[in-house]
Image (cartoon, rainbow, N blue to C red; front, side, top):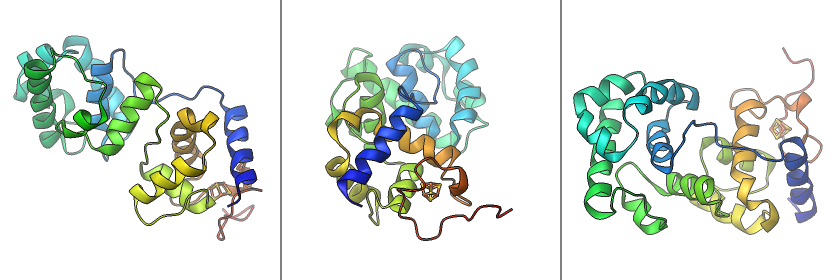
Amino acid sequence: MNTEKIREIFIRFKKNNPHPTCELNYKTPFELLVAIILSAQSTDKGVNRATEKLFAIANTPEKIQALGEAELKKHIQTIGLYNMKAKNILKLCAILIERYDAKIPRDRDVLETLPGVGRKSANVFLNTIFHEPVIAVDTHVFRVANRTKIAEGKNVKVVEEKLMQVVPDEFKVFAAHWLVLHGRYICKAKKPNCPECFIGDLCEFEQKTPPNSD
Ligand code: SF4
């Protein structure tokens, strides 16, 4: 896709939603990082339902550590992979308390070494809390980038690198949010809503959903 079209797509994303935000609920950086860990292969809505009650009683590394594994699991058992996620969150709390004064370091390399935090999670965290111009590639971003041909690639690393090259700097901070929301609500995995897509005339997907296709 040429650069003019890419720019126009992001102009429309911005016009449609000038200040997009992460759909995970959080009040502190620690709450966001826990929510990000819980959101792997789970919906933001499901995570928000669980964290609303969890964070009301434990929203710091010390408090979650005091809660203990069994109690933590009770709060997150509606979320997929909760056993592994509970273990990772407790390990995360221990590391933050022991090495980082119970605070989350603003350092990509350190973030990526924390239990349950990979490159995508580190990008979401740095982008959401510090507004760093990085683009986290999740399943929605990957799909939308490939379908539209904004940034094609066989794996998330390639798509992330291409997005960082082709997305104009002025749009980078919100780029992942726009692409996630577009993928979640319009360019859905099973049946993209092409007839109502506001970037449909620019998108280069060959198999667009035709109008009246119900
Ligand atoms: S036109 Fe269809 S395939 Fe292209 S971005 Fe819009 S919903 Fe997705």
